Amino acid sequence: MKKLNLKYGCNPNQLPASIYMKDGGNLPLMVLNGRPGYINFLDALNSWQLVKELKKATGLPAAASFKHVSPAGAAVASPLDDKMKKVYHLEGCELSPLASAYARARGADRMSSFGDFVALSDFCDESTAQVLKHEVSDGVIAPGYTDEALAILKTKKKGNYNIIQIDPAYVPAEMETKEVFGITFEQRRNQDPITEDCLRNIPTKNKELPPEAKRDLLIALITLKYTQSNSVCYVKDGQTIGVGAGQQSRVHCTRLAGDKADKWWLRQSPKALSLPFKPDLPKPVRDNTIDVYLSDDADDVLADGIWQTLFTEKPEPMTREERKAWIAGNTGVSLGSDAFFPFGDNIERAHRSGVQYVAQAGGSIRDAQVIETADKYGIVMCMTGRRLFHH
Image (cartoon, rainbow, N blue to C red; front, side, top):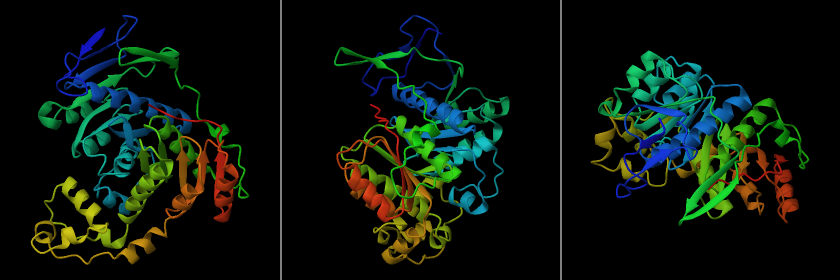
């Protein structure tokens, strides 16, 4: 197909809308189900690049959960134990490697992933489709689908779920263009690979970088490459646990992503795991309730007349002191930044969320202060020498 008409543009009033190849060639993708819109394709094509690069860098199946052209979560395949299956509402499920990658990507920030667009590095199998079947999602892009997976996905959204198949061999032209206000911009695509070579320059006193940290730092950097800037990304156990995107101040990115990482960790606390939800409560309601329960607004879900609609019995609140103590138990977290840290305050905030490994571009006039702050906490910091802005 040379041209595909879209449901509408960024907004319903922006019609007509379409996608096509400037050289007049065929599109490297097919819509197998549904009718994707403009933003759906922006999410699909950005997220596909992310998972394709993650798979190449790690050798593992990868998945991403995208919202508004930035990842809410990204991950590579790694088994989930029973505790994490409960955290992600997957008790008793047998997960393929690809399904585990999506479960982790979706579970990174379940509030933000509501209504996501999904990218899968490998053929979508039945196990992954079963996980997707029970999530609120707008669509999926993958290099292919098994017959069983396709049949399952076609039942979503009353048969209107967006399913896109992309040619995994497609390579775009080296130069890319975009139009803004009728003016054409042109640049070389950001196609330089992110590999362990980016992690060789370690100016901190602590230079010990275990294999798991290298993997997680690569995941952070590749995720940032497809995240609206400014952006900062926290990663643990092969998955993002907090992405801060599109903030004007870098420390605000670090705080936003750190707060998400803290929430991800708090969801694993005994009190969060033992919340006595009513058995028929939908997943999104449970996720929203957990989010509020773990915040200073917990009284909103524990008030008389409200908790009775959510729980079989009134749960014990989690105090601010208990939350702080639990967060302090998170360790081994990796942090990536799409540009240099201008001040040490970013490292101070990151340390409070268990960060022990950092990859950032370097090049600030205050690099020495940032390194000194990292040394204060024994943090390993890599200077990549590479900015990863994405707009």
